[in-house]
Picture 1 (cartoon, rainbow, N blue to C red):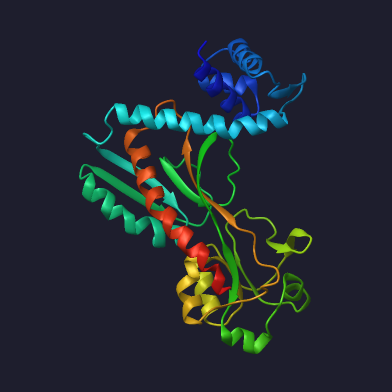
Picture 2: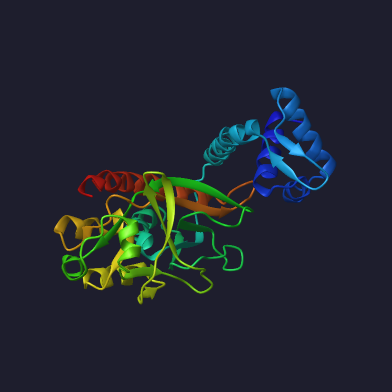
Length: 309
């Protein structure tokens, strides 16, 4: 068995949390899956998983090895894609989803540039702040903020996005300037909530002197559209938790100002989600790389603007 096959098997066992599930995904028997993991452990001289009859959990060495192993597989897939000359005869439709703010400000402006280079490709961009299901909705890619719940999908991290709690000068004049998350709760500030069907109780994860802490906020305003929350904040209706890139212009103009600066929000992951395939669809991979290359610098630039906070 090749070393690369062993690494690929390890990555899928780690991601799926099961030898049998990984075997089904890779279309090999549980015995082959187990043998590959054993060979890899023997080669590395460490145990990668703790196994019992009821559970399988990665060891510290397994957790450490996973990051590098996943990067190796990504590099191999990119190299294979280059060899098959993915830039020729690229055609067909791409179905892509993104949150409203991310899609409008970061993804949509890049789509015409991509289509200008690949005139036989169609991009169907679906913008929504709700959680999407790639399989049932027929999506090739989904950009998202946060942490996905489905471990059967592959994740390509783009960046950690800095966020800010902000409100309008009008709101602050009326309700006062909260210095921290505790002030927001104690003074019953109006918090603007991003919610979607099926969402549970809403909390804000903020940095405190003792580490990250969840604050259970409340308010009369909620929407499943992040831009609606921005509009409400601009109109003086409450405090919004926003990625800085979405409100950088308003912060610069002073129409929104940072609040609770003693307990700023924790950053949120921006990543791309796609289905696991041994050979990624060339146009899907090319579009993903095209977008990531261009929006990564934009996110980095707005993250540094956190100095305005």
